[in-house]
Image 1 (cartoon, rainbow, N blue to C red):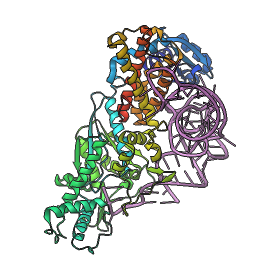
Image 2 (cartoon, rainbow, N blue to C red; image 1 turned 90 degrees about the vertical axis):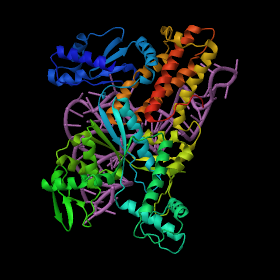
Image 3 (cartoon, rainbow, N blue to C red; image 1 turned 90 degrees about the horizontal axis):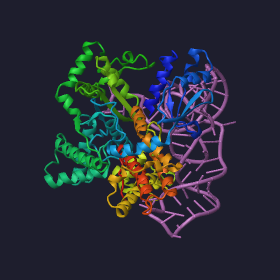
Amino acid sequence: MTEYLKEKIKEALHKLDVDGIEPVLERPKEESHGDYSTNAAMLSAKKLKKNPREIAKNIIDNLQLDEKYISKIEIAGAGFINFFVSPGYYIEQAKDIINKRSEYGKLEINKGKSVNIEWVSVNPTGPMHAGHGRHIALGKAVANLLKWSGYTITKEYYYNDAGKQMENLAKSVYARYRQMFEPDYPFPETGYVGEYIIEIAKIIKDEYGDKLLNSENDFLVFKTAGENWCFKSIRNTLRVMGIEHDKFFSERSLYDDGKIEKLLSDFKQRNLSYEKDGAVWLKTSELMKDKKDAEDKVIVKSTGEPTYRLPDMAYHIDKLNRGYDAIIDVFGADHGDTYKEVLAGVAALGYDASKIRVIIHQMVTFMQEGKPVKMSKRSDNVYYLDDLIEDVGADVAQFFFVMRSANTHLDFDIALAKEQSDKNPVFYLQYAHARISGILRNAKEVFGDYSKDVMNANTSLLKNEDEVGLAKILTVFTDVVRNAVETYEPHKIITYLNEVAEAYHRFYHNNRVINAEDKELSYARLVLCEAAKVVLKNGFDIIGISAPERM
RNA sequence: GUGCCCGUAGCUCAAUCGGAUAGAGCGAUAGCCUUCUAAGCUAUAGGUUACAGGUUCGAUUCCUGUCGGGCAUACCA
């Protein structure tokens, strides 16, 4: 419908010799303003040097619309043109929704294109903590959105197995192992203090006994054991969250393939890097001219080890070379500044960095009884993601993390999330789905297998406010998905589903669906139920939560 | 100090490229279960959109400044 009206309005504008403006078509909040509204006349006012209301009249005179769709057109306010859609159109759409089922809402805007989305990418130095949850849930929902927009998608996990952090892990495990024989053996100042390190150390002790006590200079066993243990933990949590990556990309492989050295020499060759104080610097101040006080950044430390920037750039170049049409990175706000340097470096070597889109999300504070939950890596006072999922459930966690816009700070109310009651916003949505499912089960008992006949139902019987209102909201799902896709904002789906659930609950409350005495009306209303179920289910799929048949 | 994000109802947050009377949930108050799931529905109260300017037909949205919060300002990633 949106497309249809837009097209028609443009045609009319063309006839009035107004080209090159993009009229906005929106759904007004106020019902008396119609179902769709456009500001086309206001936008043309300057060009035509006429009163917007007068122009609006001219536009309408030049509009050729199908009466089956549009029942009334009005000019209002400063020059808005309001369109009233025929109720019958909405009702008719419900059958269409049922036919499309799991395809309803899917777009083709990115059909035939490929996208790579990289997220999670937690280094295997420990189990994931609750704060990772937002990142994980958001990435999952964005990945779903990309898929719905038509992309062929590759989900990727990049992990740093070459840097200091892995060494640190190895040292920590070694220290815990040795402490089992020598309780006074010192634990490294910057070591990982979590309980899990002791667990890993025990595994090593079980396998090797005391044979590795003198391996201060060869941490390989400890590193490998640590990495394996941590990855197992991480993957397990991801599995519980319903996430499976297609590819795990190791930072080390970039070194092994010589890509780091190649990159370094490329920068040198182009005179984009220089040596100072024993380190190699990248001329980021020149590469990022639009940023006022950009400083040059170190890419190889004076110790000879590259900083994270170099492998990060090499990694992105690798992805670009793999030929994706788009590359998505999901980062927390703590990485908000650094990716710009990485992109600048990539672009400086002639790669098309505009293909890379970075989604930044702000941090999370977990609230318990009105107070923030303290988390400290130093003291092992960590709220792990596994604990959170155990406390509130995977669905609830997923929902809460995606519920809010990513670029605003999130307060996660654990008590509210735990609440198995009407206070919990997840259940409001899932309950609508379960409720419909219950009615459909009932319908089967009363009418037998009704599915075929329902498609022939006499939907002209549906005309009260609740019925039309529900049908109306169901038809805009595709527009909502498109909007969410374009902005990479899955929370918009939740806001919308809330409206769907609201419309359904109201409909349910005022209209009995199943009535053995009135089969015709029952069937007509079952059409609405089926269609509402499809929309809820498809929406849940995108945000990544389950669609319960019973609650 | 500087850069990024944010400031909307008592609390947590929405608000379609700048649109019409700024909306939900929680909390508060008052109602609704002999009828398909009351995890529901209905109604009421609650706002100078942090503050001060600017841009224009029109600003929560864009620009400037002030105040307040988060993150980043490493040869950690």
